[in-house]
Length: 590
Image 1 (tube, one colour):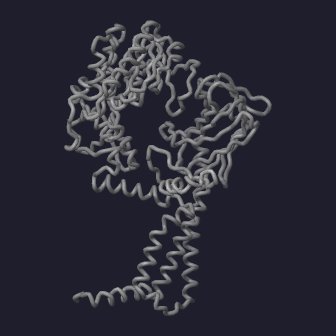
Image 2 (cartoon, helix red, strand yellow; image 1 turned 135 degrees about the vertical axis):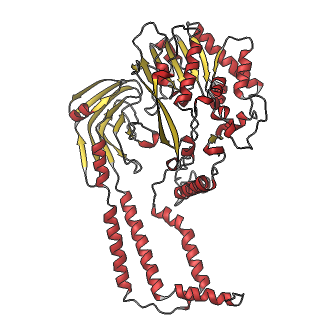
Image 3 (cartoon, rainbow, N blue to C red; image 1 turned 90 degrees about the horizontal axis):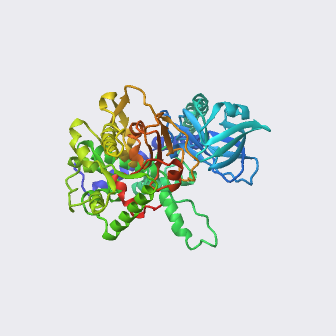
């Protein structure tokens, strides 16, 4: 059969007539009832959340925060929920709604203050609509372990009084797993929802068996039929927004979404633009569509959906493109002369201040992944300039100064034949790369402190495993779909260093997610060190701690003189990865 321009309208009309037949229309109505019922029960289930209620009071304004430890015992900002409590509120029930994305918890940490102060806790309850657990003061005292920033606890006057001297003070319950699993199980009503949905669809089908549809020409008009389907399709995001239908999709956007603005006479001129931004960030199915788009591009096309954040290289290697990282690699984003003068002045001022106190200062710069593994970059990432920021700093500080910079580039490039040193899907080095970097650093420090000699890799067992996709895939919100090789170095003999107690520092920027870490070794002959660091120091931290009587590791680029003066170390080190060198432009002086 040959289809020409004259026969095409007849074919469309025939298709529309068949689609609009009585049986098809009845099935379509049943399908709508099924979908509507499913969305209704899904919305109903969204209200089935775990709530934590804490009856408490505080001596000052605080932001109590709950941190839920994952199966590895780790905590993140995503697995936390906060509230507010004013010192003037008196005894009040502080309410937390646990995000539905948290389905597993091996421990629960409660941040109870901002530093020095007193908090009284009368009871803690965890509940759903179907089940509830309660801990009175005596049980809180027994089950919730304090960290070193809490100096005293006592049960009196029907409440647990917690006295803290430093930040972050928190209590941790390491036996919460069974309770949390029980509460999660009590909310699992999916089978009941499905039975109800199927029952409603069946009743609708039975009812429609006794209904006869009149023959209306509108039904058979293909243009009207297609237009109605199109209107229904494009209306779904708006309907989802008004019905507040949400989906369990986590999107890593590295920014805060626009809040829902309140209309008032004061902001009536700004309201349209603010609401447009809010709607753009929160329209229905947005996260799901972003996830689908990212998944399609990452798995099928093998291309990054966010080129200004992540690029795909060869053989499954991913590279960070944010904060002009690749532009620096190309030599296309150099410091200005004035910036170099300012950086040199700042670092020399720090060194002078420390030397006056008998302390040596070092700057450690771990290299970016593309600096070591440039062979896996795509062809269009080519060198333009001769020098990068690290070259400029080393050259500029090398002129007539004694400043000590530890450059690991040559060490790691020469060691590439020993195994992979960086993760393919992450920005960080792995444990092997971190260990080789650690050896170089300790050898450098050993020139001033002969007692420092690095450990040999023969003292470790190599364990090869698999981990989920790294931070670059997390930026694309698809890390659960990919894996990466994980190489761990397990010590043959236990580490000597043990957790130490932080000093009473004037310090407000630390959180339980990025805690200040203190390690101690019982050997008075060893030096003491304070390290201001970033995320790159997590892997080699245990190696370093073995060589110092007391090690204080602070996740900040701030040069904290309070910590230094109270610790009185022999060595102060600032560690910042190559991509973070831009932060030196605004670095503080003592």
